[in-house]
Image 1: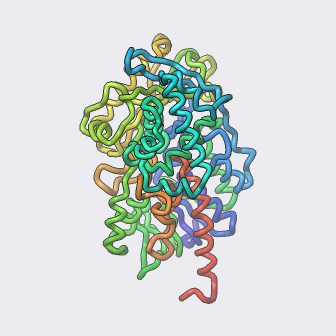
Image 2: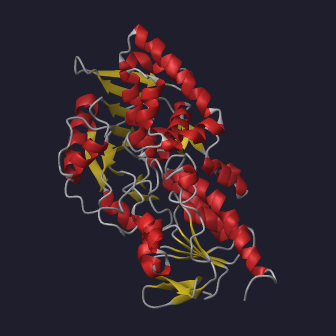
Image 3: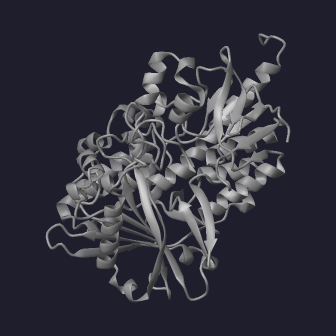
Length: 493
């Protein structure tokens, strides 16, 4: 391998690889370094006994006009973006009868908000009230200025201001946990509204699983000349004076570059890989105060025969979604009676992911972002109980459960913990009021030549990996411009 590059990218997640591929296509000599044996970060897949399992990411692709699709077009491989849409089913516990009501959405009337009102048990008056509120929300979403004005407004404040009736408000709050991965009192309405409305249009799943998208991106990187150094941990981003000079990896080996792009998370980058002494105290303090998203925990159910027939299932109640209090309670081991559960039936979307006649489904729920949280098993247990209660028909055919994953496993594959209690977040940091939009961390750090990419940096209102890819699409041109400026005769030597 060479020891000198135009740019070094730390992290082979969607943001890091998306940025690396664009820079290599523009002619920059690019190296990607990652601590994992395979690319993808939280978007990896693995095979076992004829099954193909996703690691980490379960859902998050819109039915159309997504950022992954835009990236693949940018990299001249639009034909490799292949997704499937299937109907979804929502199960909602009636707050009065305590029974579960079910509603199937085939997306044919996805933009009609009335389609979910019966599931939520809305009265005629509440339906009319919700229609008025939903219309105002849709109109705001069409106006970029009005949407940007909501950067300082929490989702809870917005929902109350729009006067949504409680059943619909509860469903929107539930979505904030899974769509923006945060609590209603912290989520910015400017982020939650467009994500919510986009996913009302449809939820898609990639052929081969989410990990296959990462693999395709990695393959394209190599075709464009990107070099990879896997199973290698970056110990230090090297600085001389006020400028980046490269990186040192575990074992002492050094690679030189005037530009380093970090997909390792802004907190880990500043506090661990660079060090506080290279930044103003106010900047370090700001970085430490970036709020992490919630974590997510899940496992795979393996069934001896296909039982569930749709692609995506959502189980929730008015008590299942987490506000700040419920989230803090869960961190202390107090788990509510209900938890919000997402189920993706992978083998319905793509039968090749399971042996013939079998079925696999990913079952997940929110968790804390603390990699050392000792209470994750409580959420697993409650999730298993609720799935059995809502869909008892799967129990006679449940052969095993595979691949339990929580914040510890997420941190091990993605971002190191740099602030106590953080690292296992599923959607990075800076997802809340005061840290999004114009307040979002900028791609270029105060250290010359050091850039951030991924969900922490400049990504727009998109869900999880879509936001990371959006960041890559925005950050790569800025890195390239910096590279061009360095070639200028006017650049200080």
